[in-house]
Length: 351
Image: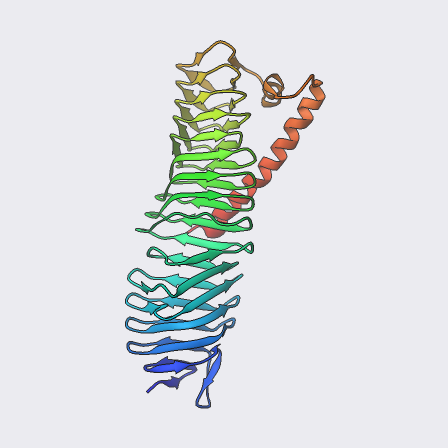
C-alpha cells in the first residue's frame, strides 16, 4: 500500500490526487516517488519546491501544471501517458526525461517557459509563445521548430539538432561537442555555435555567432548577419542577399562565395582563404587573405564596413552617403541585440 514518510509520498499502487504538495489519508507530503507497480493519476499542480520522481516500473497518468521551482523526473524504465498525461511546464519549472523512460501516445509536454532536459528522443511536445528551454543531451537527436517567442534549444556535447525552423525570439545554442544541421533561422532568431554546424541558413534579420572552437560549413548567410569570433571558423558558405559577415581577429574563413550584395569584413588578425567574390559581392580587408578570386563586378579593398556597405547598399534610387551610414548603423544595432541574446544563452546554459 502507498504511504507517506518524511514528507514524501511513496506510490506503490493506484493513487489519485491533485499533485504536490498534498495529503494522503491525512498525512501531508511535498513530493512524490512513484515506485515499481505504482500508478499516479488525476489533475492538479506541482508547486515550488515540490516534485515527482517516476522510478523504473512506475506509471504517471496525471495532468499536471508545474510551477517555478517544481520538478518532474522520468527515470529509466518509468512509464508516462499509457492512458493520458499532459505536463505543462511554466517558467522556472523543470522536466528530466531520462534515457530508457517509456513514453506512450497519451503523453504531451507543453513548454510554457519551463525547461526540458531530454536524455532520449521526446514524444509529443508543444511549444507556446511563452517559450522555454529544451536541452538536447548526449546521444539524442531532435528536430525542432518552436513558435515565435523566447524559445531556446540548447545542444549539449554529443547531442544533435537535426533540422528545424527558428523564428522571432528563438535562440539556438550549440555547445562544444554538439552538432546541428539543416536548420533555418528567420528574422529575429539567433544561432550560436561552439560545436559544429552544417547546412545552416541565416535569413534576413537573423544572426549567426560562431564562438571560439565553433565550425560552420556548407551553409548560407541569406541576408542575415554573421560573426566569427576568435578561434571560430566559417567554411564553404555562401554570403548573399545583403548579408554581412564579420571575421574577428584570430578567426578563420575559407571557401566563401560572396554573391549579390554579400559582404565580408576581415578584421585585423583574421585570415580568409580561397574566397570567391562574385558580381555585387564585397570583401573589406584589414587582416590577411590568400587565394582570393575577384570576378567582374566584385569589390575587394581595405575599407571600413560602413563604407563597403555604402558601395553595395541595395536601394531604389539614389541615396546620400550619410543616409547609407545611418541605414548600416540601424542594421548593426538590431544585429547586435540578437548577438547579445545568443551570448547570454551561452552564459546562462553553459554546462
